[in-house]
Length: 261
Image 1 (tube, rainbow, N blue to C red):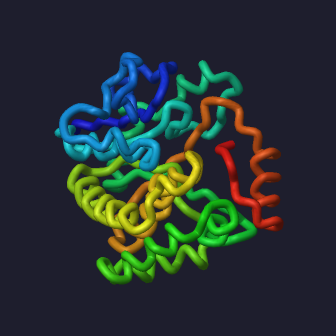
Image 2: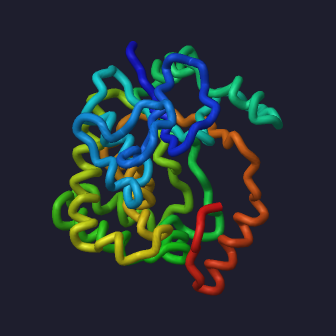
């Protein structure tokens, strides 16, 4: 079973040693080499990285990789099969999902996704509304209603559920990956024609990448494909207190996020 898991990166960083992983320099166009495969070769949208984020790597894989399964993780965020998470970054790299782990998970399902993230006090739609500009997400719903009405019910469910498969992370069978990319990029390409990302500052201009996170569940829930959930680890410390405070501040004051945490 030929599988490649892209590691989206924009700078040189420690990488797993398992051959299943492919470090990919996303947004590489016009940038100096960092020693990784670049997303500005072949058929690519590398120049759109300021808006599409890691999706430029997903697009590159869709158009240029020939493999049975394709996945994506981030240079500071990976899947793991371990329950206990070590304290140091070096130790965490030792428990990143291995080839054998992937094989076992794919015996249960054709798609691997992160365990759902729970926002507890509000729905996925309301969280986006409080922290980001809601117009692009609402327009996404309009596009689905017009072009892909069979997905609209699952999109509307974002207004009722508090859980989602986050981070644009997955490993999936190539035929599903092709189907998902065809659908997702068609929606996003129309969306950026209707709402120009450049009208926002650099943080909020990345809305296509964020909306695609929400679209993964819309696609999964509509298609009904069987998937397996896998734990995700951050390689560096996450300040959950600061993150939680920013979340509550946005919810109760109406002040949008201005940076990542």
